[in-house]
Length: 495
Ligand SMILES: Nc1ncnc2c1ncn2[C@@H]1O[C@H](COP(=O)(O)OP(=O)(O)OP(=O)(O)O)[C@@H](O)[C@H]1O
Image 1 (cartoon, helix red, strand yellow):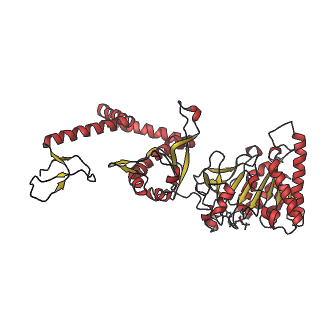
Image 2 (cartoon, helix red, strand yellow; image 1 turned 180 degrees about the vertical axis):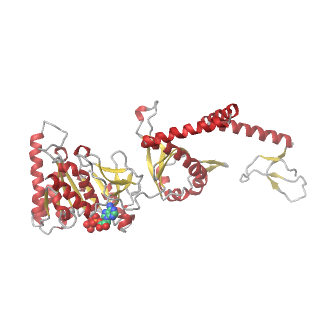
Image 3 (cartoon, rainbow, N blue to C red; image 1 turned 45 degrees about the vertical axis):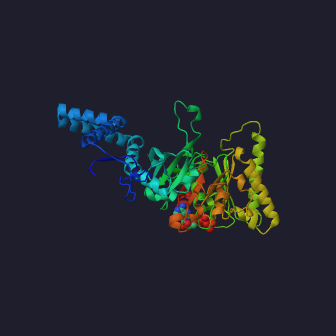
């Protein structure tokens, strides 16, 4: 058999021909092989190479054009012109970075890094990872692979937009997140719903769910692995936006902003999960507005531990288990009713003023009031007041922020009246869906797997944003005792 041959079939194909013509020999089978003149093989391969090169040049026309122009410049004007040009470009980029770092980061550094990660990590490992994790498909010796459409990077996370194979669903990808994380060398991988981009042709459908596509969110480095100190206090009250209060950091290193205006907030977490750090971070974020009299925080602390330390900060405070706490709740209901009577038919959107400040009723352990309190009558009154506040307080500037250790239904049955909910470390996986809503655990809110070690897991939790059902991992800033003392002093200065 000569050295040059064309095989028509792939090795796995079951296409064989008799390999011997002697009728008396035992039959032998071999793949069909045609012997070719060597020159023809050389020509065919040459043509193939030229076509492949042309395709690369056309596909990466911007790079090839740049290289061609630079090559021509170096040839026509000498290498020193190139060096001068490189110097000017570096100077321009350096000036841009110096004076406009955020836009330089957004427009130059991140796209360049995304390109690099695409070439060096995702494109390079895509085929082996897809094949080994079972997300590729074979038929008739042909391999079908999902396609990477885009790669985006943030400081600690990569996002890869993928066009799935026809017939694949995000749930299949969710089953393989571990393979993907290990395959691409990331800490974790989550599957996110893809939204249609804003294209000129389909503007009307922009922002809708995009069938057949998913985002892979691959965390390179855990931005929440180390405690985060309390965030800086805003300079003036106008900087306090009650619909975007900074309380910590999100997994992609962006700020975690919490809305209090027009909503109520429930923070669920086992003991030591860091509920206190969320409560204090919220107070800290509102501090200048509290000092200006535009926001009041009323504290209710049945455990006499968390809020008691900074009781001077609260406009009203109670830890009286013999009815004082319930009276405070009822006082909030009375204020709410007065406002409703005055505002009714006049305005539907609430704006805090000195006469009508935004009132946050902060309760450290809701279940004490509604379930554990030994006095049945107090329990009933507390539940009635909380239900009224959470169902009617939003539009008149009253907000309930409640912390809760155990989110089971028999402990608190008003949790659905809290539109915004945070799941810190929880003991059982079922509790996650009770807090964040059905399907949150399957979509990656693994609050039962948060570390119980305070430095690693305290203040870490999951939230759901308004625009997407996908949970986001967050960590609240740790407001120390010294910070709380400084906050008290800051408010006392104004008094
Ligand atoms: N955001 C955070 N970052 C780092 N460490 C934190 C954070 N929040 C809390 N911790 C640490 O975890 C410990 C427990 O936190 P915290 O008392 O707020 O928990 P909790 O959920 O209120 O618990 P409990 O329900 O028992 O009162 C704190 O003493 C602190 O050391």
